[in-house]
Amino acid sequence: MNGYLGRALELAERGRGKVEDHPVVGAVVVAGGRSAGEGWYEYERVRHAEVIALEQAGTRARGATLYVTLEPCSHHGRTPPCADAVIEAGVARVVVGARDPNPKVDGRGVERLRAAGVEVEVIDAFEARRQNEAWRTWVSLGRPFVTYKVAATLDGRVTVPGSRWVSGEDSRRLVHELRAAADAVAVGMGTVRADNPRLDARDVHAEHQPRRLAFGRGPLPEGSELELRSGDLPEELEALAEEGVQSLLLEGGPTLAASFLDDDLVDKLLVFVAPQLSGEGRSSFGPLPAPVPLHRLIARPLGDDVLLEGYVHLP
Image (tube, rainbow, N blue to C red; front, side, top):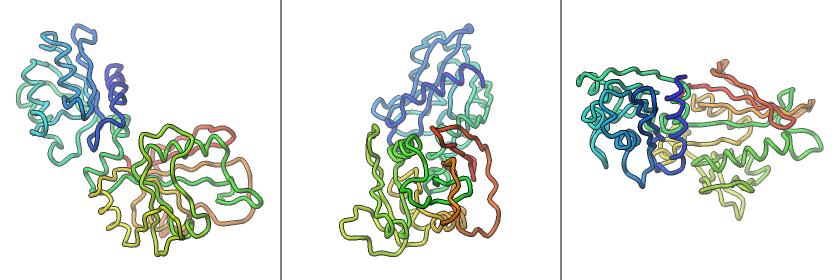
């Protein structure tokens, strides 16, 4: 990936947790082979990343190249269209990390720039799409981006006889970090009845606690702080999206996993594989009607465990 686009991705992360229901965006203006302006989006700052970078660059923006992680907007919102600001600044070339799937934008920003004589290159980089994977699913499909995580032994079991835990301490800490980053965390009623989990993020930095949900038929145990969601899964996800939930972390058992996979509602899998054999117990996933291919599969060590990450649906 181009170094300046990589820098724009780094800048975009500075807005993480500060963009409300918007995507994170970063921008770099390059003039004379050097960075002339940088910017990233934060909701309270109002101005978009491209505008901030262009203001820093000043007159050096004329004839320059703008690297931006997401397609510049072409509609009026809280601010005028960024595409117009780019044109007015005299930028000669724009390199776009990813198209904007928002129906209000989707290609229109690129079209406006090209119509004004600006050279536009759309990279459509996986890294740029992944950076806003939850928002992209939320804005284009009208449901949250769903990640299913499970801890399993090498023989694919979700329990180990005589042990409370399957995965190690490092893996369990990462799960709490995932909870802190998610808008909502959910399990099925089978897990609720067996474990009565809290599902909150503990012993990690959390800007907010996620909404904590239980899918299935009640009642919830006395004193449970979970929200019960008993409707059809697609309808429940649509309702959650309307309530602003962009990302949903599933921590249920194989029955819940199979239900979501059967409805084609899982976007990403996180499998924490522990270095042991169980020999008995439930498998990681319930029966599936057909194989589920995964994309962009990566593996990395996590303490004594191995974390496998793969996409069912690419962002």
